[in-house]
Length: 479
Figure 1 (cartoon, rainbow, N blue to C red):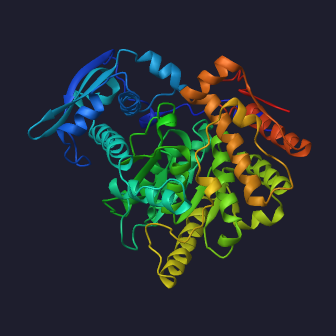
Figure 2: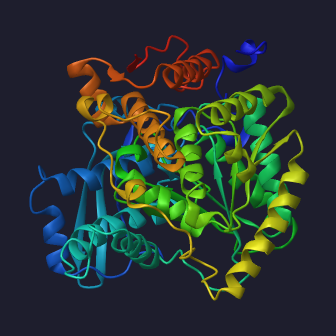
């Protein structure tokens, strides 16, 4: 598939200040009690009791797993089950006080602390977790106005979650570029993401990612330097995640606005509703899932005239990656779809210039149609793209992947196939299903299955499936 296979056999060897902070004198775990930062409002005694009434409840388990992921920031492990097993003795409680709440932790990873004090960014992320878990359970689930049976109702829920997290900022200067890409990338690719982020930061653009390592961390780090040079003191580095992925992709420490969405579909919708443009870096199956999701939406007839800047970019030595993605898209969805994106290789400044120009077009379009700058209400997202997909073996086996489907529906089902593979690679629930029932079986049109198989083999040969795993064993069989 590529003559540069050897350049893709190693994932990011983190260096300098990318290295998880763990001096020799800091070993073991720590007990601590911390007060909230600026992100946490008040909780009622009933809300606290609901969260902690039963430590065996799914709600407490959700809170504990997400909190552990935040404390484990910088981990180079992407197997959720192994992370949880390594910290089986970790415990966290919400302590109700007259002046608010505190978090009491036992056996927390010591890398989240410096000189006995929790790192401020970690503190804020922890209380973001508490904020979102409580809101999703205590408010959305009990709100009679919540309607998850219609497309409009689901979009309303996404809007409410983002509004409650206070990440929807009015004003034309809050220009947000969402960056997608893999957590398992080469060092050169990682450095390239930083350069692109730096160029966008110099131009006053803010960054949102999936909040993990690799291509999710690099653009934020680069933008932070660009913002500092421009004396932009309130740069935004937004991380959007969801419960099943957060343990495998712990939030990186640069994220200063963290939001946990209920599932992958609402996370994806949050990305595209908030974005003024999207930059995609090299990645693996998760990145392919995001690309197919967005292209499926943009190819819907109702979105044909909607401006949406989309750029695929990589360093020169990784050009084959996007050549392969481009070929896959052309042969599965058709050449017309390729008009919705540009490919820019080895030119970080050009990526930033194109994005800045694209954002201007988007804002003018929204102003003319009286749409919000901070939330893309005009983007039509079909209900098929919003319904949560649970990748059981039966669901994966029954996916319709045939050329007779409308383009956006074929993209939706390919996206689901990729989502299942991501789950089988790194998510706790997917790992358990694979262990119990063996690999997923993906069936469909012979030509499409051949193209899918070639793409997956390319990801494997380039080391893009899992962090540091050179002997990858597929969690799927393509038939």
